Image (cartoon, rainbow over all chains, first blue to last red; front, side, top):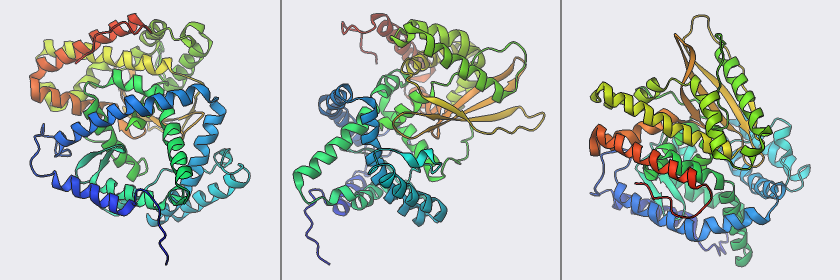
Length: 240
Length: 216
């Protein structure tokens, strides 16, 4: 099997590196006692770095994109990326033992690629094939792998140790990462990032107002959400 | 990750309002949601970004349906018992203010999302229910928004909202817990007051970059 692999970030080694980093830091950072967050010192530092990166580079780009791009086009772009993502979602549903959902995901890809003009229009949702949200982190969680420590990754943001490994697999499964022509691949990546970020611009203000401490607010919301996603929305309510 | 902020903010578009006589909880959620969204759609001021108008709307229509003392107690968790009745009262007020402002910000960002109400079943005599709704947005997937309601003397009241699997009360429980462990109940009160105080400066200053004091 040839591996003429020109990916700039090789995903599995990256994931391994990130996990190793997280593991190495498990030894003795000052914490406020949150059991899920043993490397809080490191995480807070990374969080600041990411916030800085966002403020200086990503958010301005997203704002520019939002400003010049009419909403229908923004929706179209987001749909195209969503369509490509549905393949991996289907794979994950299969791995989690949900063949019906996997079939539905496959159906989505077919319908949206054809009727939806290469994914621009999310016709499948209108037809009742709802979009699922699955990734390898959730699959491992479903298989019984525990969260592991909460880690804030440079650039990627909040994850758990398990989800970091999952991220590596997600990247490996992402068709866009196989584009050989580097400038094109980078452009696609940039558009995806900016498009995703633009969808979240309004949310910024709300989270600033809602959070007493932005770092811990995001952490706790992330962990809750992951548990809910793994159970597909049926997570038990946490008792008082 | 900011996705949660978005989920949280968009979900807060679906508020509740006052009903005089007792209404079933799902009808309550539906009526109020529709009423408030209708008002927002028609009100030019709100569309233009007048946060004061939104605050008023939230105060009149939304807040009366929340059980804030219970919400605050839940958000405090174990620490609630450590607080004196006077402190509990202040905490409830501050938490209420925090939620009102957050809510209003989310409502002000409303942009034609639609709300779907999931089928609701309730046994006669039940006093604690969950009403499930779904918010559809132009770009991005729909967001689930579940209301937890309890029946008290004054009727059905909301004591928690779960946005895309994230419970509001549970999320605040962690931050409040942290603050109390570090600075005690008074420290938490102070943090909330600072935050609410600085927010009111921000909303008065509206768009102008002329310094609103950085909180915290």
